[in-house]
Amino acid sequence: MIREEKKSDNKKIFLLEEVVLGPGRYARPSFRLRENLEHNIKYSKVYCKGQKIIGSIRYFNCKIENNSGLMLGPLIVDQKFKGRGIGKELVNKSIDAINEENIDFIILIGEFDYYGQFGFERNINVYFSLNVRKEKILLKKLSEKNSTFSGKIELY
Image (tube, rainbow, N blue to C red; front, side, top):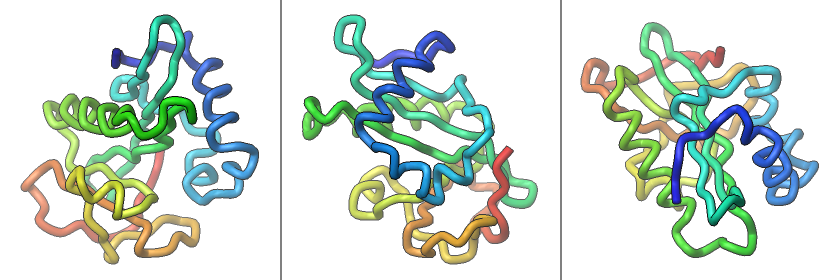
């Protein structure tokens, strides 16, 4: 069952993140960019099996010039439940909810082979303050107000 994340889920999500991603996660650019920022709990979701959280998706506020957006990540699923479509469900449900809001885009650092199925595309015209491989920056447009996004992605 997917539900909105609650503040009381923080510790459980942190522990799941620790197991799934390990200590090396702190070296990843996506983690370093989000360091010391509060995620946007309004759009973040968890997947529960009974009382146990087995999956989580989080979003962080960001912008590119005057366009408001969200940065997706991390998306995590308990290793015992991988390959069952839980990650896909979390992405789809959260994007459906975000589509109803006044958000222009969602951005992430990840694999096109996976995120392309959700409408994410490579965008070589945007960049982060840290060095991130261009082919890993994926963007999904949610608004037609801007046909091309370019410039620095700022998280806040």
